[in-house]
Image (tube, rainbow, N blue to C red; front, side, top):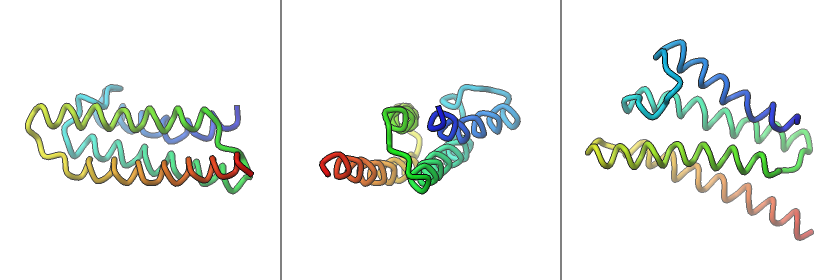
Length: 116
């Protein structure tokens, strides 16, 4: 339960910002810069919570993988929508590539811990 609360804090903050600024809970309908602001609240907040969990000697669980997957899936959906509408998606693509690299690092460290 502690992991779920720690990981849900950036999501709640992101959606509170989304509701306060844009009066919506649907981040997919946002224009490019507004979605990037929301996504840049969500992604670093999630990975900060992951670092906090690692410093508290918590193990990476399925909950962590689900949160990472849903955040990545949201970015992929917005990337596909941007490509279909002919919008520039370079910044979002860079964020998604960075997110993949960081996720692979955490997954590889998790696998290494499981092997030991």
